[in-house]
Length: 437
Image (cartoon, rainbow, N blue to C red; front, top):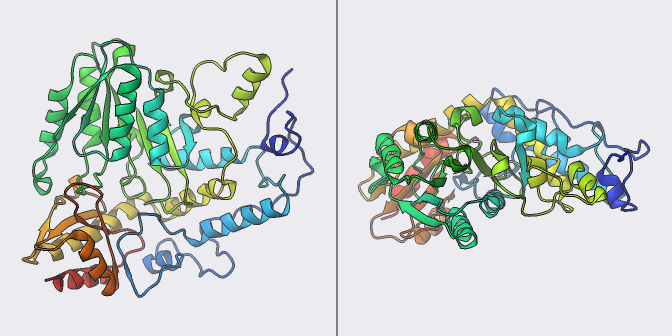
């Protein structure tokens, strides 16, 4: 009989063993409503209390927190607890579970409304997309469809996929003026771009270049119709870079209807840095890229055989990680869940709408992000007449407003409203931009 696998055995003798009961354990993780030592009490219904869980400098309006998100108090406390445990004892494991990743997967599954067995753990959106596009199996004659608006991680991912498989990659342009983007045109453009053997449709939920949010559900419904008469191995797979929607928009996986979704959890979810997920419902379509360290991998290795059909567990890269960060993902999901996904989306979009309204009244500002909440999320992109975006960012920083630039050609000035932003900071940002003349 093959014995069970755990990380303690790997860290120790390197031999396979059952779960040991003698390892010192940390105390259970606090619930999102509790108050870690030194942090203010957390009232999830009060936005001031939510904001108080972060140590952001209150003198600055925070509109670039999504770049590498700050962690709220419960996440910071969990990171420190796990770090202290690992520093005190390299065999440390959190109490309560033989496999700590299970707690992370279950919290993630509750948050996105999915099965924990459908989720692979990653280090970032880019890693998730890399695992996806490096692992997808394409046959002769199949092709890939993407858009002109996607980020480097998608464009490079599908280019490498094409280099490996010989598939052709085509790009479509979903809009000419992002502020006037149309859901119907977006869906129709992707539909028109499909070929009879398009296997991969690679898109981004919220464009970091413009703030345009794609109607993923409508795209999925269109593809379901296109796939109706296709063989399973020829079905067009909808693959989504979800990073700027995940944690900002309430939609779960059933709402989106895609086949794969990759996202870092260290942006709008405000999770630990260097963490992410890759969710999928068509794992059989790809081959793992990096050996996994799950039980199935070790059992197969012991027996001298391959582990069989691909699963999310097999697709999760093995190796030792920054476990104090990975295990604190549970608190990040729980923190956001305690606030309420719908409330987070409403707050994010209300603030973005307020910001767009204020910027839209300034004669020297050109908004790129649509006014419609259905076609936008928390990103607000614009240009300033006669001013380079990098200069605008520097001058805004002098005025205590933290913004960013988009890494595209042409670049734009970019703001991000979120749960760490206040209405007063939105007004502060508008006044600061007003002075950029």
